[in-house]
Image (cartoon, rainbow, N blue to C red; front, side, top):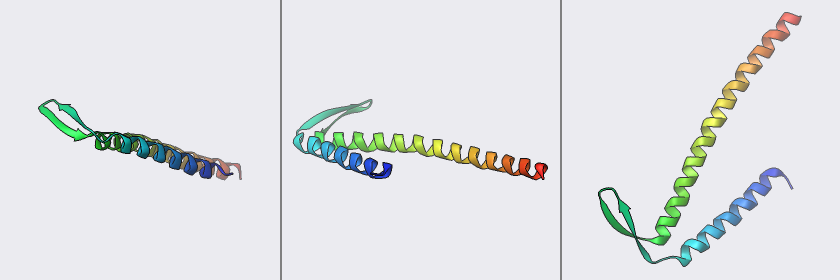
Length: 87
């Protein structure tokens, strides 16, 4: 199988595991904020944590990809200059 297919399969398996875990835990829990306490269903706390983790990881990956694409563009430009000098 291709690498992308493995990532999709692993993503689906992870999603199913998190969904089952979240659905089993539906009781209310206390969430302490600096300014007070609120009671939320544990399923929302779990899913919110997973979503925030995904957003943080996705943001870090996006920054890394942008940095690498800038570097690639710069290196291609330098390579083009070197090829012009060789001719």
